[in-house]
Length: 394
Ligand SMILES: *Cc1c(COP(=O)(O)O)cnc(C)c1O
Image (cartoon, rainbow, N blue to C red; front, top):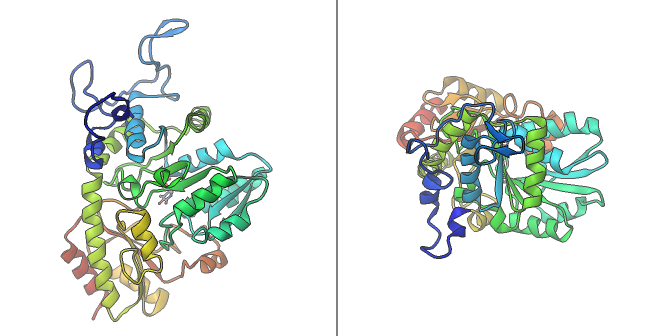
């Protein structure tokens, strides 16, 4: 991190300053304030064994626009390096390829993004990698699941879609004691609210598609690592498999990052107001938001994160039919997959994001058929609440 390399000077700038400036320098050729989109396949070499500038050789291996985003994310998570990928799933695939081989075992949170579950059960199982889906909210369950061939622990907190939390310090301490790398999918809270590396985790995975982009414009992913060995293992996979992020996606994501904290604070404030509204509505059977005092892990939420995020789930009385009717009727909220954008989105996980998780497994981990997931956006809270009130009916 450049700010840490300065011999003396002011204390490390605050998060919001760094989200604007980290990784970005004015273009040396023109002075352009924004990092250009370096749309090039290759880079001219000075001689057979020397590149003209900065070590770039071919845009599958590295690209300056993507590199600027990698440096920004490294700084924001407090890691040693970051490797960007074409999507969040490509990042998770890169993590698995870097740390798991045939005969190995991995522990994954039992509530995870549907795509992570699908990748583990439908693809890696074909190559002799075994997965245990464990309730990582209970460190003792994680301890009991560790085997002699366990090579990776991947947790997601808050988990998609039930919002169950994992105690990151507890699981990281356990992982460290057994010499197993612990990677955390930090997509829901971002480093603005939660920094897993500071709590002892080894790596952080992101779908940059969500809050970093924030504008429904791209799909992208990243892995932030905490040491050089992890960094070269992950970068080797990125280059060897070609699961790269494009310079256009990196450029758009760089711009999104600059307003991350401002968007998230407003979206989280909206979410709190909406959760409180839903909690008192007679047609709502249950509402879950880590910021509510009755959230089962409210204390842990306050301890390990500096904000509660902008994801909510609730159940309408009347089950699936009532939930479906609400989603068909609702105005302003958009029925769509994705989350974290300025537009408020409403999702039915069972038929949308988690359709690939078997019914029995969904029931076991609490993804009920009537669960409605909200990604709260940047609109006026009053308008979002009015739309929900109208769709619920009084
Ligand atoms: C969306 C998401 C992913 C996958 O990211 P893509 O960019 O859609 O491939 C992984 N983890 C979580 C928690 C997500 O929400």
